[in-house]
Image (cartoon, rainbow, N blue to C red; front, side, top):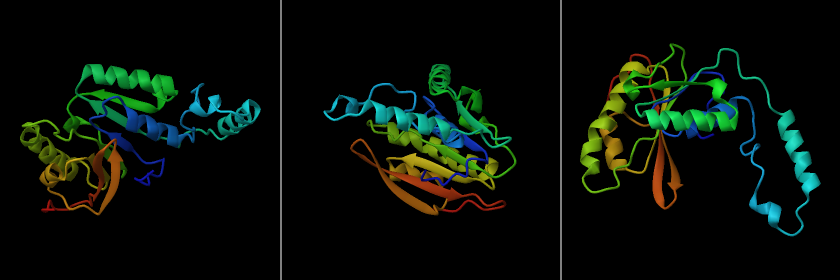
Length: 201
């Protein structure tokens, strides 16, 4: 939601991992309520729970599901075969596997459609000793990928390490605070105008 994606333009999720972001984008694209297929919630075990009312809400939610925008492309990539397998299985469980194009390979090789869209990554934070230095090159490569292949797109990086984020080398247009468990994170927004130059943040 924070990306303000229009649900019709391309949505790219390199480094997709288990596929969470791409799956959420697909659910948004068809207006399918999250958890609609889930059959057990904590509130169901609370005194006063009305099963009939809940069934009515579910029926209403199912009626709101719509067809995706014509030509919509949601592309998720990862260099890990096991991660991509899990992402595909999770997409099947969510009922949106047919809406997502999965690609095996380095994030820099992710297909980028010519029309403008959203590209979103959730790279590692470098929480363990010594990892941060190794990840600097990854964050630098993300900046290069944005600059060289994603012109016209709006880019987002979700990270819990602002020191690493500096290695991206692009100026942010917004920094939205979030928490991932106890880790303070930021959703960093980048506007990749066509012909823009890489600048220090």
